[in-house]
Image 1: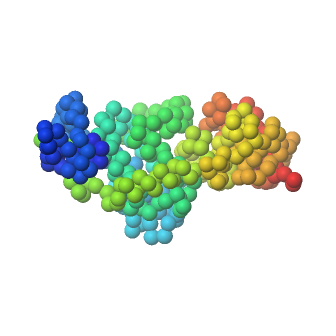
Image 2: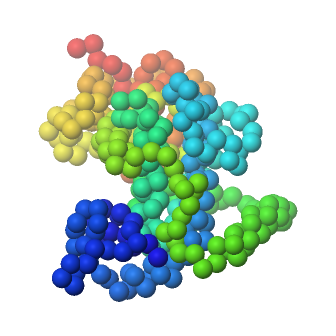
Image 3: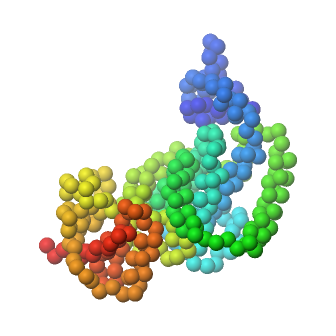
Length: 350
């Protein structure tokens, strides 16, 4: 069985033994032996690893389709690593691919729950390799895609509260038709049969004997560095960014969901946070709002179209009791939407 360094994750047949102590042949760090972890690793099978990796691929494939269809990058198709693996039909609006991707994130969050850290580390390294190979960087990554990548990373690390909450808020009142259940189990039967066949074929193989065809191309160190830069470059705090629209058209990016409350440090000091050149909106005073370094002043009633009203109500459906979101109106005003009330602002002439 291959052995893995605790520090650099290098896989090797045997550790280097010097004076009765084990050292990594790659980074020369001492190997700290944890008998409980070794026992757990010896019990983990390649079949279990491939099942989790398969769910990871099911999640990334519609994301690749979404990126390709959105036209974010020229020649992106040549950088796809899961092209037409399971998705055969590229027809339909962009919103369908987005919704399928986020549904798969929700499913992957369930699949990875309870998995050991060494399984998560394999997935994490594959994620970094995928980012590196696609060429996505902080400089060329749209805001929406940044948050999609951050949510994937959060789920890998076990922080799945956001995707689970947003999904359950939409589906909690959904009534299931018994006929749909029959169709669901019928559709699952073929994958289950394939899983059983795979388990038999891989019997006796250890989890880290993953064949090269199951691994992504790319450099994990460069991918990790690119992701960390992406994570630092968001304009909207991730906790304030709404992920799920369930197949509906996502509002224009400049609606800028998410805002700091007026009693936050940014609101009380009147200063823009300095770690991001395009900071989250904040209150300068109770009736003055700063968005992208531009001042907006509160106004009274404003003309609203039916589309404006629908957009505001749609936002309210997904807000938490204390949440707020910014929505642009057709007349050029900014609506600060909360569950209890909506306030309107216009750009200051000062």
